[in-house]
Length: 360
Image (cartoon, helix red, strand yellow):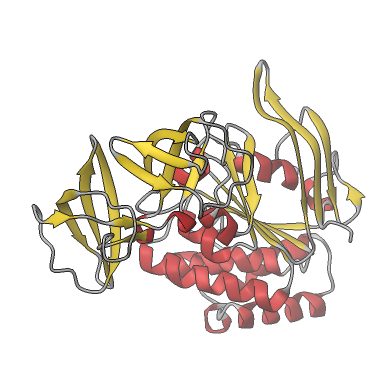
């Protein structure tokens, strides 16, 4: 199957500073791909290169089977939504939506039909005669999205479109973008540093660090089977707990040892042969069981240091071996700071990382 977007050996550098080195990635038709990572990791640079707004040093960019590496942005068959709304303040919503089509010289009837379809899709029908100053932040962002949609292209690019909105509006528009993708079926590439947006929107997530893709996989795969320590620590709130120790095979079956804690690893699915030696055990806060002894699981004895009520759940923080660890519990929690705690760990839900940080 032909890729909707194909990046081949892409390199982007500014003088001696290389931002992206030899990156290759194929994005399937109708796929929703999210580029996720911390500030400065190269995700927006990659998006701008796909859009034609960023000069590249080497490699090729293909869109819909066409080499567009040196094509102008208007000739690439893409629609782009920026972080800033970038609306024309003196134009009505109708004119903002139609501006690009009018410049392209489309027939008036076609322009009106596209604007009407897009306005209906984004619930802007009753706002077409207003100017941006008369709209809320969420309405302005919908107009910005609509300005891309009216082009009716196969590939849409989103550069952190929700970052300027408050939490409630972000949640609402995130759902609308998800519905848009489901109804339109276009290929969408979405840049964000918000892991919730990534996990809820994406078919696949590309987690980037220093211009390199650390893992490219489904949200479930990335959450439950992170490829390395960086991915494991970046995804999740609170972040994954980590305990440094070693793997011992002196008795045949592998065991993780750390400060008196012994975790039988026979139930762990190793991705590669795990030799004896230093290792890091990672486990999500929700994968700890409150009473490890009752469940027959290895327990971490400690005391509650902080309780964070979250409404539907709560996060308990506790100290063990000089580290602050967290446990997430659903429902109401009666435990308080100072109470004894002995949570248990289910190794089948844990992650093990070798000395180089890669998943074992």
